[in-house]
Image (tube, rainbow, N blue to C red; front, side, top):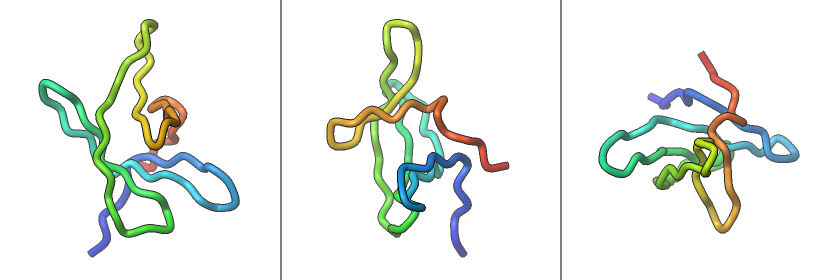
Length: 71
């Protein structure tokens, strides 16, 4: 059974990032994957000085508010 993503962000050429879930604790994490992969990634959620949440992958910031909710 496939896990349905809760949010999606298109990158280019049909490739996108799917957010699977959030894990809350002392350090918040996001579980995500690329739309063409099966491997899940676990990234720490950071906040800018203005309070905008994002996670990093290979030096790129992916802001949570740029994702479109899937439900």
